[in-house]
Image (cartoon, rainbow, N blue to C red; front, side, top):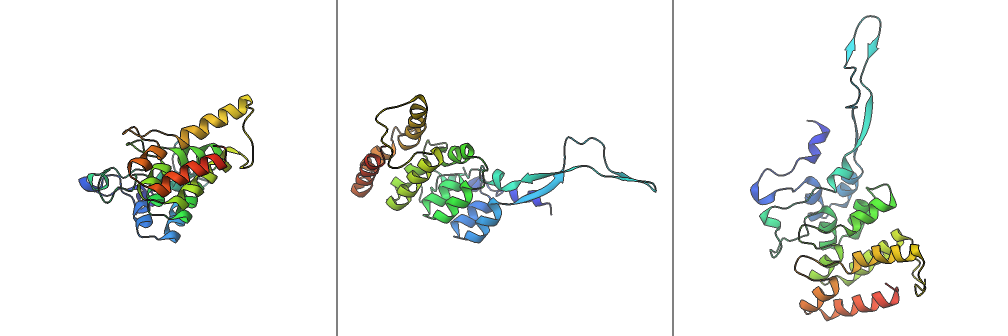
Length: 220
């Protein structure tokens, strides 16, 4: 069996896009999540056109290149009807949102750290699914204020924003950071809700209070 088969998805119309990484998260198997998100394999370099041959005088083999399967796995979404929004098994489609929805912070960290650059990590953290829900929306659906706070602080850390920084006087760089920050914290899903208005619509007093307090305390 090829190592690339780890990228295979479930062959069923109801579970389209589900991978072994989604399954590991659902079962709370943190060790497996750590393994899968860091998985790398050597494969033939597709740009090496020499081919493979061997004779009595010399041996020539294709150049090998390293392929990071973990980075590919975290980008595969489970979009089958079983995981549709409104169902009891709506976990957000992506592996990251699965980890958030099941309140597994260690898995969130492994998934984010599958990326090598800060910008890629921030992109993965803030990326919405096909319904427009991001990681903060998922916290509101499940009343997870602890996870919400951790995600906020992670986003701030990736942007290089000091929690104590007073952003009352903006430089051009500060305005860019504020734009990225607001795109995460105030993202509007396809139903028209930001995390705050979603919490209010769900009647979650604790989530509404947390969003308002954290936003003010962190100057976000």
